[in-house]
Structure formats: structure tokens, C-alpha cells
Length: 45
Image (cartoon, rainbow, N blue to C red; front, side, top):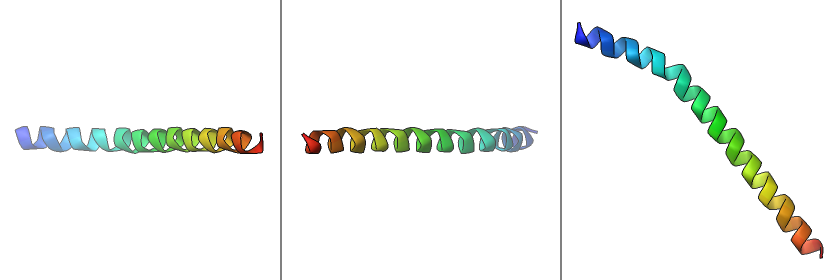
């Protein structure tokens, strides 16, 4: 019975982990784009 509960918990966590991965990827991409934009402004001065 405990094993079934763990399996059910793992199934519930999978979509959350995928959502977390997507969120972290988008946030990281935003930070990189922002850094490159600021660095480009710095170089243009």
C-alpha cells in the first residue's frame, strides 16, 4: 500500500517538475538576454 502511494506521488510530481524546468529555463533565458542587452549598451558607449 505504501508503494502505491509513492507511485501516485511520483505521477503527481512529474508535471510540476516539467513546469518548474520550463519556468527556470524561461527565467534563465530572460536573465541572459537582459545581461547581453546591458553589455551591448555598455560596449556602444
